[in-house]
Amino acid sequence: MVARITRALTRGAGPAGPGAARPLRRAGWEPEIFEAYDHSAGLDQGVFLTVAVNGFDALAAIGAAGAIGGLGFPTGQIRFANAAGTSLGAMPIGPVLADGTRTRTLRRSELYATLTDLATDRGIPIHHGRRLTGIDDHGGAITASFADGSSATGAVLIGADGLRSTVRALIDPSAPAPRYTGMGNAGAFTRTDVVAPDGGDYRMIWGRRSFFGYTVAPDGEVWWFANPPAKAERSVDELAALTPEARKAGLAALFADDAGPAAEIIASTPGDVLLGNQFDLPRVPTWHRGRAVIIGDAAHAVSPSTGQGVSLACEDAVVLAQCLRDAPSPQAAFVAYEARRRVRVEKVVAWGAKMGGTKTPGPVMRHVYAAILPMIFKAAATPKAMEKQAWLFGHHIDWDAPGVPVGAAR
Ligand SMILES: Cc1cc2nc3c(=O)[nH]c(=O)nc-3n(C[C@H](O)[C@H](O)[C@H](O)COP(=O)(O)OP(=O)(O)OC[C@H]3O[C@@H](n4cnc5c(N)ncnc54)[C@H](O)[C@@H]3O)c2cc1C
Image (cartoon, rainbow, N blue to C red):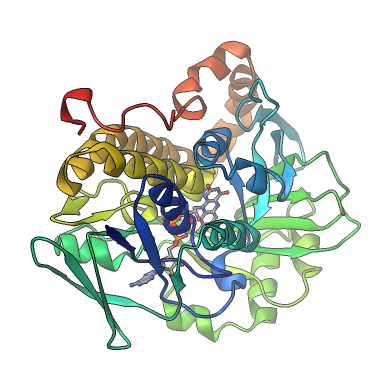
């Protein structure tokens, strides 16, 4: 059997494609990965991200937790402050598991490269520069066609092609478009002595005009992001017209009146900064049709504020592989995959939308937050509050357990 997977890129591949390919190989399939881009990861592939303990649990199921756990650095908590520099409290980023596993902050390019290497190590072919444009499901097999005129045929096609998924639209032309969240995403790396290493903790600041966050890597490099609010999406042309200096000046100006180090950190940044719009994707009604299925951001993009997108994509990848291993047909596998995943991922998207909404308060809400957030963070750090988050962080995949209900297994 051949499984055709629509994405992956040697140095810029998203996690879901290579994440699915490895367990599929373990499940007896012969996956191949097709990725639209042929360049290696740069700023356009994002800057950095966190992988949560539930993501590590999924990675452990495919033997990848060790390699990914060697990247970046562990992250314990987020310390919050307001524009005046007053502390609002701190909150742990997920629990520490019994084996010491905790959330890690990684360079996105390193995560993608490592997942891709883990796939190629298993002999899984990765084809670059192959942008999927069409699918033809002819009953016993499915053919993907690519922008370069080539095509490939397999038993199933897994669309792990991200927020702007082509496969999603081909499965269901009326599928919803990503939802703009009312803010942008900016981020980059720099070195500056205005801040010092802090044990991997994040500092996040409700500035007067924008939200800002940073963490300092053990080697002193500062990894930062900002969420500049904007009523409407910035167009591709508008973003492209901004020079690196204009991007940095515009962002730094947002924090000029704040007490924190944001403006200095931004001004110290060499080169360009990533700047784009932020989206989520709350509910995609159709995840599969015939021999095609979507996973990861293609099916359910969560707000970056959750720090869960990669972890959920890895969970999807492993669960789908388990279902394909054990179901009597691809269609039965897709039904089982959706049944196991939909409620969970939509709960995370809803949680993220609520959380992201707090980043852009109006003047009144800013005062309300200043009064209530310290109490909220204090309560959130208690063992009881951590227990309440077990639904999110305590997710566990037992690779050897049946992927589909026992009656349906072959
Ligand atoms: C600024 C920002 C910060 C974030 N921070 C975090 C964080 O801290 N923690 C976290 O877990 N998540 C974070 N996320 C979310 C996370 O990046 C995504 O959830 C995750 O990358 C989804 O993985 P994926 O493989 O589904 O999609 P992607 O990573 O988007 O990968 C999709 C791949 O498909 C390829 N592709 C697209 N179209 C085609 C086509 N037609 N044919 C072939 N290939 C195609 C693309 O080139 C790309 O390589 C953040 C997102 C953003 C924007």
